[in-house]
Every structure is written in structure tokens, then in C-alpha cells.
Amino acid sequence: FANPYSSWERGLNENFNGLLRQYIRKGTDLRTVSDKQIADIERALNTRPRKCLGYKQPIVVFNELRNAA
Image (cartoon, rainbow, N blue to C red; front, side, top):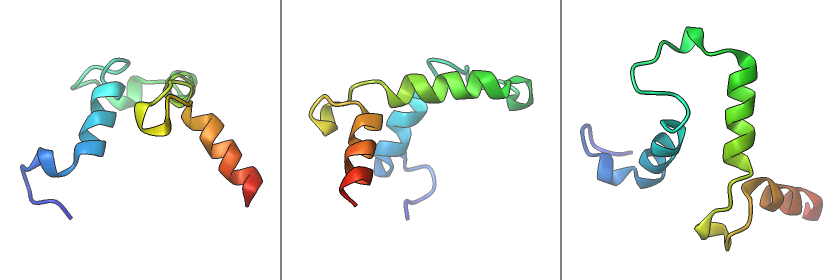
């Protein structure tokens, strides 16, 4: 667990928040965001190549792991 007001202890969380803010501005009432918009954002983030995955897309890595199980 991270300490309150210690965002540097939650690097992955803060990085994801930054990515999400590209699509939904801070302070936006989430009740105004449609399910389709959320699905589109989810698809965009899951098809974005990530350095930590060797520049593979998260969805590709997920499917590789799922098929290996």
C-alpha cells in the first residue's frame, strides 16, 4: 500500500492515469461518458505498444499468456 499523497509510490497507477487523461479530462463527470466511449478508450489503450512489454501491445501479450495456460 502507498502512503496518502505519495503519488511517486504508485508509478504504474499514475502512468495509467496520464494515459487515460488523454481521452477523459480531469474533472469530467463520468456519468456523461457513454459505454461506447469507454470501450473505444479501452481498445485504444490495449492496442498501444508498451516499452515494458518489449513494444508489444498489451492485448497481444494477454492473448499469448491465455493461450499458453
